[in-house]
Image (cartoon, rainbow, N blue to C red):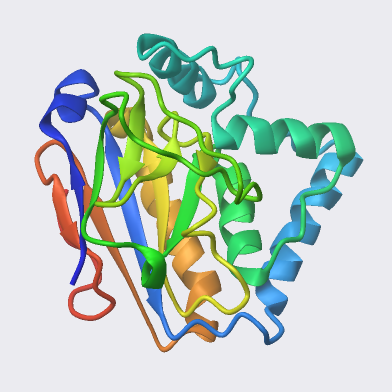
Length: 245
């Protein structure tokens, strides 16, 4: 069974990191997901009537990611953290994209809580997944661009398995190979904060909310956490509800 691991160098550079790993097995992405539809519609209604706005780069949750991006050489106003880009799109257009129910679920949770989110189809992951600094020799094929190959710069933080890069710039963009589709059955969803001391409660609430959206459409779900104190988690979907910090 594959695992997720936080590399010691990343843990040292970002010592208050907390990552939620929400796994789901037996996902049924081609049936109706009314709770996800309602969550998206409610966010869009609130933006339209002005009762709520998504976090922007002045918010401490987003500002922290901008600072982190700059630390490993990425301009966050040109290559934005996923939650920043998603919130800006919602604020500008008044609507979130509809991709498929699983992706729509983590998008809704991400923008609602101001936390980056992503997902990997585990049936297309090879070996363990490590959150680490790039060495410059890796390959990355961006989501939606199967014929494109990029090479992360040395020092950039990436998610990588034993084949190539799964996410560039920590959480900017996922890879095409491990994209989540309506037919994905075994998926790992990721939610992240760099300030667990301040925002750990938000991360845990978001992980619970995401699990609640997934559970009616999956055979099994589970939530685990990675942190510098607990840098390893097996991507299983049975056993205890929460492990680690």
